[in-house]
Image 1 (tube, rainbow, N blue to C red):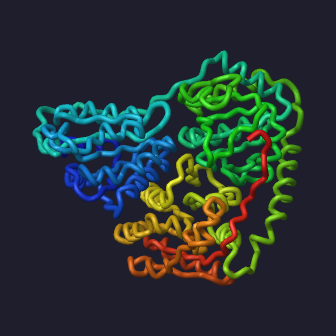
Image 2: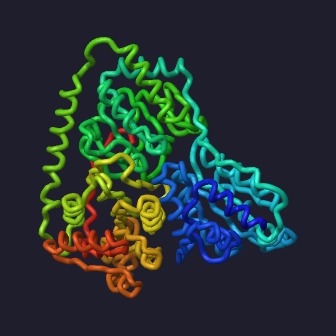
Image 3: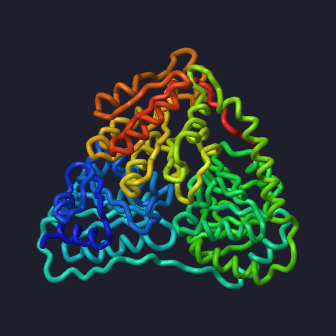
Length: 549
């Protein structure tokens, strides 16, 4: 057995069924021989995105894997790995490597060294005998503590080397920790004493599959729930205590309850400061729970820390709240639900004209409204690209199932959502997987819709085409007026047609709903579809400002 076959055997034991890749790597043929299906992308960072989306839908219990060739292949993958690192996504990158004898000969690219700043673990494998141990370390890194990408650089001579003896390897289990019981008691005391507690959920709740526990705690206190962008759908947005997620845009309910909150229990969140996140308003007492001790007091002062898995932490806090709670709280659960519902009705009423707009070019919110009305949200996985589509979609897309939204944006690479949607579809073939992107994003990675066509990955890509890089208007005002530097253009439906992807270009409001129905029929048959919407230049977002940010 050769080294490449050892890699494939271990991946098979770990439940790997897809290998996103491009174009030459010793593991590819060995994986195909082991019935692990290769999915060839057209650009390496999209291949990483496919592995990323796959891992997210499986909540890190099965990990996406991407393979790239030595040199230019793994060099091109760097942006995708950097994005996954920013989002704490556990995926495996198998990088081809130059011969061991050439590792230190300039200008050889040594992936295991270059990628260390954007991986949780990166190593050069020196021999076939070392592969099982290296794979064990890699999977343990992905399945313990804070998630993140890992990289193994395997030179061709290691792939080709003979492995001696039996493979000593068993699948690596998730490693979870529980918080200090004394800290749990203090957390329950703080929450029960709070006048206006708020639960703040990050994607750690999704990975821990703890949405039901989060909802139970919210109803027990009672307290409203906000989420981060990657935490969106930790509990469904349709839950009566959900206030939705926030990036630069947010719901009116989010702002109202975060403004008056005195105690914020952040669970499954790193509380990382980012230009693209909500931020924590000043003056809040923060209970911070995360599975990574290094995140505590990193950006915000924590009054109390609970280090542990989100599910185990919520179990402990629920039990302690039940033990300490006596009598009625400051507000009853029915009262809080009605208070939130009234504010939500008011907020949606303010935006109703945009959601029913007959403008042409199209109002982006009319498109989102038609999606809300036309799709079976119980069976949809939604993601977005960076920039305006994210800010327009995130506050208003109401999830009905936990884990049905892939939010991202600590780093915001244009075009990343396309790979995520493909990976999600591979992980959940019975779901309608949708990516909403802008025309600038399509320019970055749009050719990879052909990857979906070639591999029968039935995703729906929606392009908001306003012919301009809108987000940069204010910072490049003179350049835009004088030289039109931000004006871009194209007929992306025709591009899709040329890449064997069914498509429709829509410019009239009445045509949106029929186009969505046609898209659903096409994707249901296992084929991708591109819906190009000619939208207006306006980029009005649901921004309700919070003081202290």
